[in-house]
Length: 212
Image 1: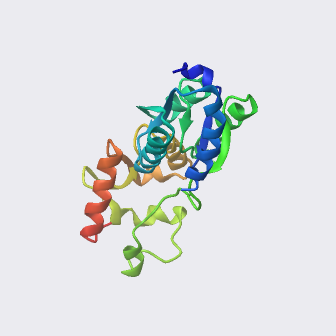
Image 2 (image 1 turned 90 degrees about the vertical axis):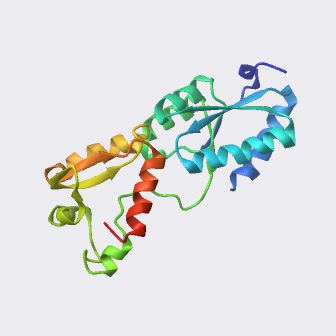
């Protein structure tokens, strides 16, 4: 087994064509021998799902030892650029564009292209709120202040509630800046569920009850 640092490969998968890409990656590193490959185990379901698929193939198909390092966006990307982490299956480019471009230009990471096509991020309201006539079909961020009462915050009913992402997600910080820039802080409170699991559970509960 050789030391991880000697593998000389940094893989960056941007946001299951990834499996096809991994075959060429393995062809590169097998010339230097087997070793331990370290994955950035980001705290959301799709990243962990892709990690386990790629890790399973690399371990059982190519005889590599696999390690998953849990953490949030910024420290794990720093580990990727610094050489402590070998593979990141998801980078949401809009959230860390400058750091990503800098690392690519410096030769610290290699971008192997999209992991899954059509990925996007944005702010959402339930479709049934439009179908039921509570919200207009062409609802936009600028319209949200006039509908705050539909999303009333149970802990502070003088404002609506905006569910933000996990504290460790870079998009959560972006949301906070956009929230203030749009002036939504005057009519809504930002609420953090505490974890991706709690956020998913809160959305599922509201959806099943047909609530905002």
